[in-house]
Length: 143
Figure 1: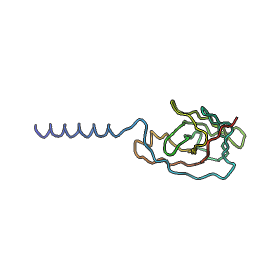
Figure 2: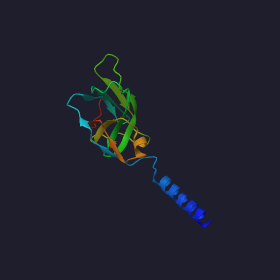
Figure 3: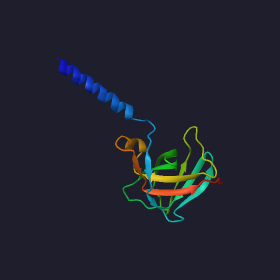
Figure 4: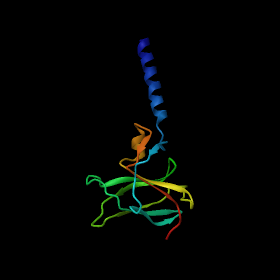
């Protein structure tokens, strides 16, 4: 009987430890992916509340949607799933808005990271997120 109580106690501690390691806002290391050549990603419009990219990078035919993040260091400022379909054009556009309480700041350096998964999915098994495309830029307002 004593061993059953001990086992239940240990299981409870393991459960609490597992729950305490999960974070709804994961602290991830966003590893640089392939840097794209000049001109393959362009900022079409930019304000403190929104940025629009034109992306001319080719992905595999099976990738219909990819996860796009604008990062300041390893901190996501804006993120979301976007279609990479082109409808007969050589590029697609993505418009990202900063998360609640955040804004793009002129003169700051950001990265556009395009990945295969939502970072919260990756956080369940790893703290490393692989960007398959990486584009570093200095934010400037543009209309």
